[in-house]
Length: 448
Image (cartoon, rainbow, N blue to C red; front, side):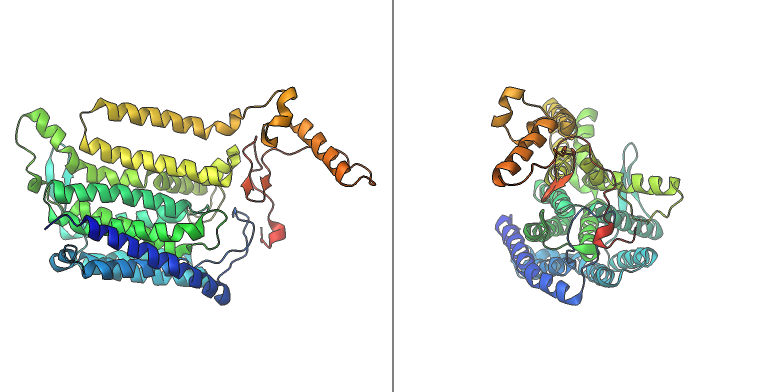
């Protein structure tokens, strides 16, 4: 089987095009169907925005699988494995539940049960974990019940982790796209680097998942014209979980012939075997941390773990003073660093340069996180040459009052009103000073 780089690229482009072109009509349909909930106290956006973006993403998934089934090299994935059909069955079920939730607000426990059923549908059709490699022990074969329970748990955790992080425009789609790109590189290396065809389904799933996210992102970047809703977040979470399950539990480590040579060489060579255990965790590390912190926070307050609040990681970034776009980019940065760092280390585990590069980039990420706390201020004589965000608050207020007087010469000058640092502008929060933790959104129709 030749290297189907062009076929992967064609599948990716078709998925992107179909998702992108469907999103516009889906937005009009969502508005007509009334899938535009009122703004809640925990929301960040300012205007009611339609949901149901998952409909377009599901169309992209179907188009990608259909095109891949008719390509010369990728067709073998459908002939040798039932995993694409298992993925499509589970995705259709979880997507349908998500569409109903976007419109009618289904109870959280019902959605949890539907997620388990969707995972069970994939397990019945063969998409399950058969064995896991354990450091120091080797490959451990799982019983049918062990594999099924582990598969369902991984699907449910990944779906909810992605759903929890879907709180800012473009955040969930971008982070999952980064994760899918890392997964694609890893799966492609296993397929053609080691000649393991069992890694082909996971590689195809990752390519299609990238296309779904890339096609939806232009409509979802800040300020978003449409949200993916639970129909989209649960869908891409399930596809990401399916990729992890396929490449973790279906690839036999013994097929890599890694145990030749000395003990040191065998230890380094075994890293690609153990990386599948870590890669799914590193890819969803930030959403997983957000999920765990949310459950602990809500349980500590005596609330339900499913109760919505405004304490997620992306909300914390806004409280630090980051703008909406900068908060999203910082989350992208950390997701890419963790996911691609794990992939790079699996390829060249003996290289100290990779460790040093990861450490340097981590330090850079910490600086970016604390950037609003160290916003520079221009000296008095240079304030007229820099943007208002770098001026002292009192001087900026005086300049605004003087400008108002010049525009209306016959009126009394209004008293100088100090600019409150951190108050959102038209397109998001400023990056100056602290911001209010819980902005008042009662005027927008919130019940709280």
